[in-house]
Structure formats: C-alpha cells, structure tokens
Amino acid sequence: MLFLVSFIFARLSRCERRAVQVLFSNKAILNREILPNGIKRYMLSTRVYDIDSMYPIVEAHVRFYAVKHRSMHEKENKDVRYAIKMEPMRVSIPNDDLGAAMHMSIPSCAVHHIDYHSPILPPSKKTLGPEDGRVKRDSGFVIDPCGLSLREHDSYTGSQDGLRCVICGETYGTVANLMAHILYNQHTEKHDDVPVQGSHQELDVDTIFKNKSSSSQTIKGSDKTEECCDAGIVSTDARIDIDKPPAQWYDEYRKYLSESNIEIICVLEAIDPIMSGTFQAIQSYTLDDIEFGAEFAPCVLADRDEGMKDTIGWLRKLVLGRGAVGHSVKIDLDSFHKTLKFDEE
Image 1 (cartoon, rainbow, N blue to C red):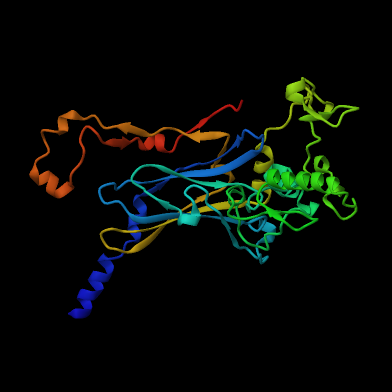
Image 2 (cartoon, helix red, strand yellow; image 1 turned 90 degrees about the vertical axis):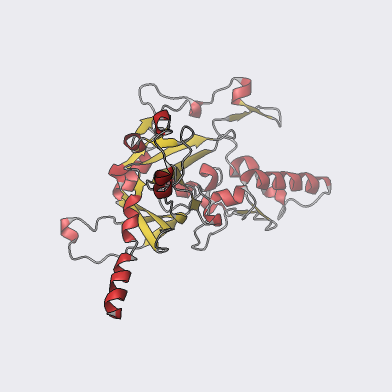
C-alpha cells in the first residue's frame, strides 16, 4: 500500500508538463543598431511568456546554445559521423552574469549580442576583429580568449580587458582607451627624446585602428585630420554606385546560418511553485525561423473590464486569488508571435 501511495505521489509531483504553459515566440529576430560612435551592434532576440500568471514560476532563467549541423543531414552523408557540440551563447539581456533571471508574468525578451566572441558570428566578420572591425584579429593587439565564452560588453564596462598594447603589454577594454594610451605615450616619449625603435612612436594609430577610412581625410601640408562629415569631403571609397547598391547587412548572416546549418536553442529553466520541481522549456530556431531587420509587435493591453468588479465575491477571491481589476493587463497571444519590419535610417 505504501508503495502504491508513493508511486501515485511521484506521478502527481512531476512538473514537466508545466513547461507547456511557457510560450516562446514563433520567430526570433536579428537586427542591428548603430551607436553614436559609429560602431554597429548585432542582436538576436526571442520573446518568452508564462501564461499562468496566477501561479508564476519561480527563479526562471534563460540560456542560448548554437548547434552547427553543417551538411550532416544530406542523403550522401547518412552514415558519416560528425563531432557536433552545443556552443554556449552569452546572454546580454537579462545579464547572465547575474543569472539571466526573468520575471515571466509579462512577455519579456532574451537577447544575445552577436559580437566578436559569438559562435554565430560569420567568419568574415570575425577576421575583422572586435568593435565591428576597428582592429584586426591578427594585429597583435587582440587578446586570445583561450576558448572561453566571453562578451564584448564586459570590455566596455571594465569587467574584462580584450586588447593589449604590443609595446608595453598594458591591457584595455576598448579601442578608444588603447588609442589614448598610445597617443599619450608617443607624446611623452617624444618630449623625453626616447628612441623611436621599441617605443610607442613606432605605432601608426591611423593605420592600426583604421582611422584613415572613408570617414576621414588627411590634409596635405598639415598634421591635422578633418572629418569628412565636418569638412564636406567624401572620399572615393565612400561613394556608392547607384547601379550596384550595397547588399543588405543581413545577407552575410543569412548565408552563414544557411551554410553552417545553425540551429539556435533557447532553454528556460524554472521551478514550479506548486510542486516545487524544476523543469525546462526548450525552443529551437533555424534560419527559416529568424526575421531580419524586425522587432516584436506590442502585445500587452489594458484590462478595462469594469463589469467584473461587482461579480467578484469572496469565494472567487478565495479560489482564484486577488486581482487589481481595472488596473491589470492582458496579453494578446496573436500579437505575441507577430513581428514588424522597420526601416533603418
């Protein structure tokens, strides 16, 4: 009898089915933003929501993984063995340094920034180096991550250093700080008559950090550099051929995701508040499930059903709990999965 009771309790206490109430958006979106300093940031995001807001899940946190299947699913490779592994993708929003915790009672987005360390960054962009190619990977200034899963964001906020000076070995988080270090030392070394060989004076900042690009032009007979946007000068490299317009920014990502047959897996772990058991909700995204240059449609509405105030009695409150009628919200599940295209300026 004890065994039967234990068996029934074990079956009832299973909380795997709680994962059914966690919704993932049907589409993930990949877009970019251009920062004031001109550096481009690329982001992959998905939207999640727990439809049971009466008993919200506890300690929910999210993770991303990238699986590169490549050509293993083609017919001619039926019996070929592949070394497939799941590469972790760092989560920027919510911050995975703080556990990537989420409150699931309202739709929230989980965001992965596709930076220099991201496993889904196209190889052509990875060769260019950090900060969208401001300093090349093989220049000697970029620190080898040694196989660790890092984020460029941590370098910008001072949590880690991703760049180093090849002369003195001093490390910095951003290209701007490294450039300031080199220029300052060049000034002091020149003032102190330090020999050029083996000093910071050997370094050409404009060439190393790609300052001599289409955005600037050096004036002959002067040591100053005028910005094209200020002087009204447009170099030959910056001109666009109207007969051959540049390709869309996401074509490179689309091609790499297709060639490598990348599958992006989103894993959400949480605790069922009733059974106190841990469960996982998993969603998979492939190239066909990714929208480029889009954003999620708004899906939260104000709950203004005033007629409910008089119908809520003590029994309903006891069974269903208390709610702020007239001040609560409701979710449009049809709009939850919709995405909106937007034009970049």
